[in-house]
Image 1 (cartoon, rainbow, N blue to C red):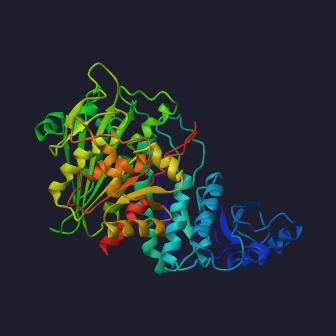
Image 2: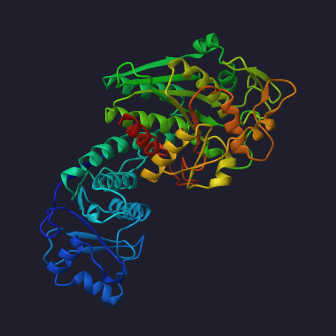
Image 3: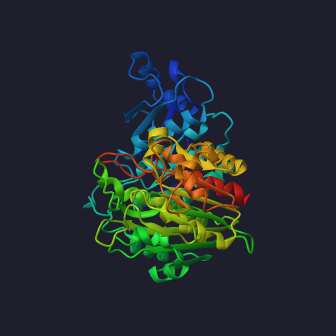
Length: 491
């Protein structure tokens, strides 16, 4: 169930809520709301500083129960660091700390006063959106295949103390949180449930329930007629039929659309280049790009953005069987270009190249593809930054700015022609992989060969789409980045 967000001034002393959230700085400096609580409770918070039980350092929090003179039965005190306006990153961290603390409590409603904190260069709408999205992110729970504990209480509503000028931030947060939650659930679902057919069904359900949304799903025979030899080569080793899912949102009349293309490999065994070095159980996340663009599409529709948007998802499995494509096969893409397959585990670019060619029929203003594409990007940037590649400086800057605004950040990697030589082949127009060096970049170079004369960018989310480990879950990235990019484009 989505958290309901509301705005309005809430007196921290008398508000009837199950939990209050306030901030304190180091050196015993209290935020306005914390100061009111301190005065009403006969200096309790100040006393905790004096005793050393509270220090106000970043990433710290303290849960207080049944404060004398305070209506709320619980107060969470969040450490904010050194006194003064916070940097955006520090505020975001404080909001995540608050959200995590809140998610662990048996409360249905809460009231936050963190939006009163000054943040460098940010207005109240940004603070409310950041706060709300952090709470929603930390409250996410995967339940689809887990026996539910119906007796457990979860957060249902969060009241944020802020003025009416912050209302756009609340509206945006609600829509983006919805999209991000769907993206995370799709990626977290096991691959025996979330296969290409399931993705098509979820898209159909969304299209049926929202005006202005249309859907087309291309089947194997449709793709054969179009000559999608690269996408179909990847799919031919699986019993699950491939789907090309095309969602459209009409929010701006006859204007040319923006296009998002998401890699939808619902399970990647590596094909005949079987993954044998560990981590294969996490390859359900190889459709993180598809989940991310679908989540962004949901956010854009729920915000009713004044633009046209096309979302294209090539959905396949990459499996090994007697009919699977082989290393040394030469396949012909929809563009007519031939590709020598040197590694069947470099399948994402083969799926994407046909989808990118197909997307150009919509004459988009810009195309952004999103993919869990390369381990090399994880090596280069780790889990913090999404890899961004584009030959269009203006588009790259738009996406980088959107990442900074949401703190769903990306880092630009070069896409120089120098790297293209690594894709040379003696048996086809080019190969599907280069040498061991600069693997993330040569993957981008490969895709660039199918986006000539297009305003295009590539986001490699292999490091940012999910957290590894037995209890790791999908992150929902880059839904926030892309939603902000589209918000700005819509004016």
